Image (cartoon, rainbow, N blue to C red; front, side):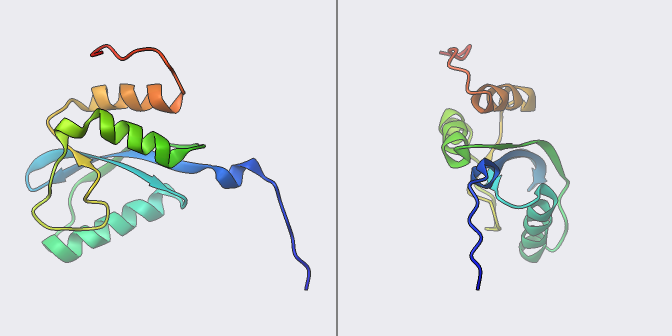
Length: 125
């Protein structure tokens, strides 16, 4: 048996994503991380949502990018938007990282700042 060892940096990268969704009649933004293809994660969320709600919600990937320290960056985004946390009526895959009541463009701007590693202060600081 041969053992293949690689030191490919890409293996350490995961995708941090933003999904624009309609849940319970409300526009909601999902912030998440996946090590799989974004389309696989979206299908998993939609399927889980369907099992709980019995219909498919509107869901559109807004941003998704591979990055290092993905979970730290996701946590940073969730902390920044914690006052906008959304609790769905039914639990489904990924329902704990939802926010609402904030413009999608504001979330996208913060996503870009965090993923680019910018240390510049946010406008609301």
